[in-house]
Image (cartoon, rainbow, N blue to C red):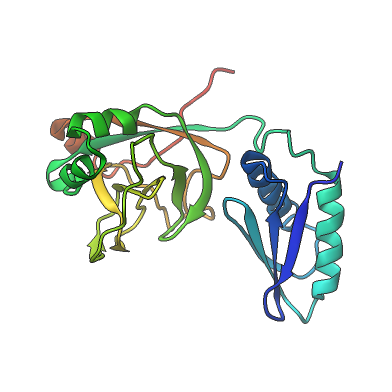
Length: 239
């Protein structure tokens, strides 16, 4: 089975592989499977593979391989992928506690106004889904999620903040995310988690990967203080 893809050269040391089936879910699975395949041991010269929603950027070391060789590998890999099979057979589940509004989510009122909802309705919409982590973004491995169902997309801030705190829970467009480390940002802040997401002492800086699932859970200020600084970990599953 061949998964439809397009390959574009990006300079002299990278190619961009785009899922082109027109099926959003299948294209997402295909590009992430390609990213995993080309970064396994035995593939010579691949420096990194950065997958997103429907494309993957593959960076290579031109002293160890050629773009033509990587092009051929990608075509061969795509020919073996079943786009209908799950990206992850046993996805891990993460539950992220959040305090909404107030000093922790100072844009919640604006999001409510822009969407024509009450603040409680925005919170309920954000809590409702079980989210699939689509890819990792900036800063620091932010989990990029399809956003909650709202009447209209949430616009980015007209004037981005120079400082968004670690643990900020935010919305923009039709997406949602968590900020693992303090950084500038232009997304609308609706809450904050007390858990620590980024761990610089670990080889994998964040505990989740694309294909894992995530849910948000509402907590109060007292619980926020109790959980402050604890690490985000996957829920334990029954053997």
